[in-house]
Length: 205
Image 1 (spheres, one colour):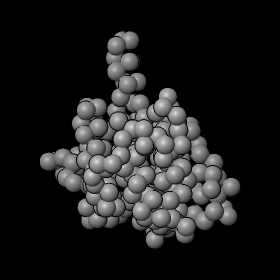
Image 2 (cartoon, rainbow, N blue to C red):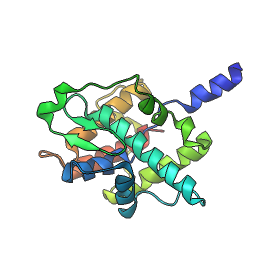
Image 3 (cartoon, rainbow, N blue to C red):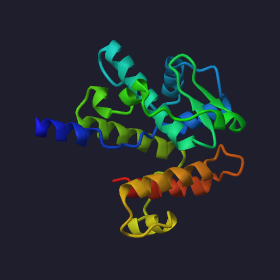
């Protein structure tokens, strides 16, 4: 029983979903009018999600799971400056002046389900390979593919973190910096964002 519990706990450890960033770009351009299946279709058309399963019904389930997981991660990333409404049939990025009217419901059973990777119905190794593939696609999409001049020391320096920074500190800093410099933001910077992507690529392992 303990071994099974430990395996589950390990698999439920935090894994960053790279679809957060292309979804953010889509929602910034079209903040409302999305349903999970239409958003999933759009992200797929953009080339970020391959066929995930030979069985159509399983492919649809996995696609929707990944989108919902990314939406909940994005909601957490944007809060409290913005509010992302995550409902299967009504996904909307609301303006900052109404964000303070909402709060993240950590008891939400849907949030709990879609943020637990074990519910993706795959082994941990498969999920990690999939997320690595997504991340490679996104790096290529933003024009950041080689990273030859990037190592862990330089990456930590860019993140202004010490060598003993925890994975949680690294992830939090990545989200903060990526959100600040994302090209779709008013004061964003595509070149800076690409460099940060390379730094995160090194540090996320």
